Image (tube, rainbow, N blue to C red):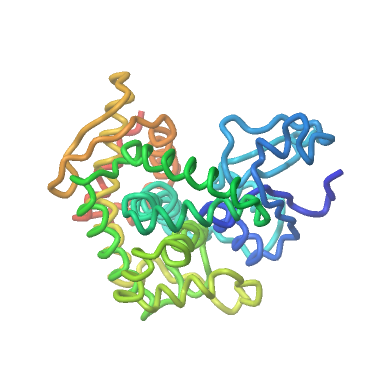
Length: 354
């Protein structure tokens, strides 16, 4: 049986969302245990944890949390953003959600940006370049099982490499969009370098859920993939150092390290929003339009390049959730957000309240 006093999750080191959640659990000092592996294989009949009699998640995503439902039955839960909000309700103290409603909204938005756009940097750099694809194809099987026999390792490597390279188009990575993705990554690093020269975290002197979302993606971009790692070392050594410290923030006392006042956020926050408005906002809007039309793919112009990719239901929900978060704000807090949005392009995210 799973220990009641611990949070249990199944994940893998090359999963940015696994790294996001482990670091967050450490910071919040929530007792946890991590089971390395594939939740589909571990929970299915014949798997190591089949005795738990838990239905594997569909689709299988990392990390997979094993959490009790309202009836006390253990179920699989996979979406990191609502899991973080659930943990806020179940474990007191050391919150990663700012109390200020306007700051809370910006945190939600930048967490989404990390999870849904910064991950495009990661997937692109990992599988677009031959050296990086070979590196990832070699390491990922060993994260699954470090004592793989050489012949199994080779077969696993060939399979995972070809499969992921074929999926590049799904997230919009191709020869046409490569410069767009890479330039956005470099601008993002430049902004982070400047921001971290003033504040140790996005919203002050304590980490938010958005910090952990961005950190998760950067553990791969800087920690595993050679090309993006070299770029980060060239552009932003502060970001390189930041991901090392983000791994374990259990020693930070949040009571002595406050959130930044919304009105005192540095100019670099506006620059982050400009980058978001430049690349992520048009992607969200085009995806939403495609969903409304029932189309399987969408095409739009992003930062001067033609962008084509698969339509995703989940990213349609992301746009809806961003709007829900905004329209639950009081009028004066909405105005504070709109003031910082002015001229960034992020204002285009907001649909009229129905």
